Length: 460
Image (cartoon, rainbow, N blue to C red; front, side, top):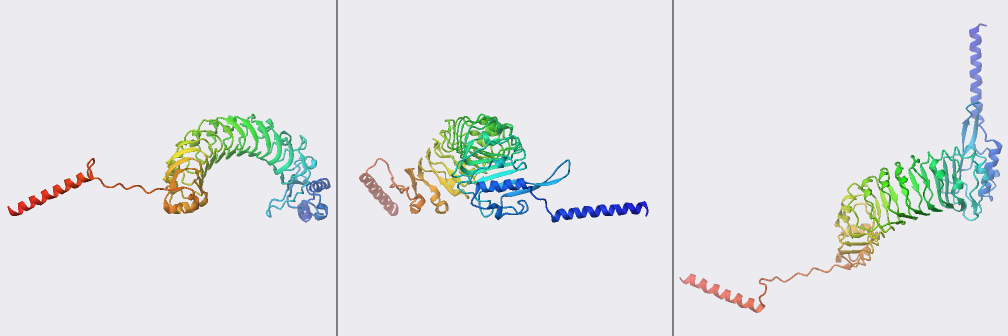
């Protein structure tokens, strides 16, 4: 046998062995190691002990997992060995489209979550800790380097300081802790999450001043701190988050002046600063320089002053909430002229006066206008079609000098307004300062004279 023949034979056997190996791998998928599989069972039992998870899912939990358990393959860079590990754990039934394992009212938080799943990328809990108190665990420093999403929504019995749950999450993209019992201040560790794209900490029990410098969070697109007890000034460093799309600081105790640095947020389309304690500095004029805004809400802050003429470049706005702000003066007609995409306008509970701009009646997409409890006056300029379209969401009560045409008075939305009185038509007056008897006498003398001269001309 020649050398060439031997080489060809060896190559044939090598290729055959490779194909057999691949075939066997395809027929016999990699299995989750027994320790990690057992940890998944224990975590499932901690969120719903009434279900016998081992009986319900007896096979490999990566090959035949319950919804909410996701695995992935990993290759060791040195040995090239391939292993499989759990990468996502989601608990709490959301909908039929995301039927995660449901949680029982007495769910507990298993410490195995932060010790047994070193490849975890996503951890999600929805309405799991609602009655039995579950404390934020101590997170080992060795955990979290691969975690990208940490989501706890509507878990009021999940309590503890925010500093205890931030951990060493250098890869974190989404931090969503909404509607929980998380308390304390925002820790400095937040500023080092260089890859973070969303921070939602709404509806918790957080408090204190927001003193952490957020300038490093260059990828941040959503910042939502609403529904907490923060106070003091809004840090000017927020203005450095130039990729921000949504900023919601509503329902806190922020005070002082709304920082001018927010004008740097050129990508922002949602701004909600409502129900804080910002001072009497007027509606921020820098809003005019934020052309991508879709919604702006400042209600509940006594900013005072008049509504400024800033609407020329804000034609994309869909909603404006300027309720209970101590606003005075007239409503600018330019709002109706430029805000052609407007769907919602709230100007109620202010001190606005003058007429309702007739330009509002040409807003094609508007479905709610609230002008209640102001000092508006004059005739409502809207057509029957417009009032029918907006319906009961056309709110006008509390403006005693505002009136409506009689043909619209039967509409429920304007029924509380008084009817406009018909204008008085004055009797024509030929001569001012002359009595009726004087007018009659003068008129008779004139007619007699005219008749005399006519006869003289005919007989002459």
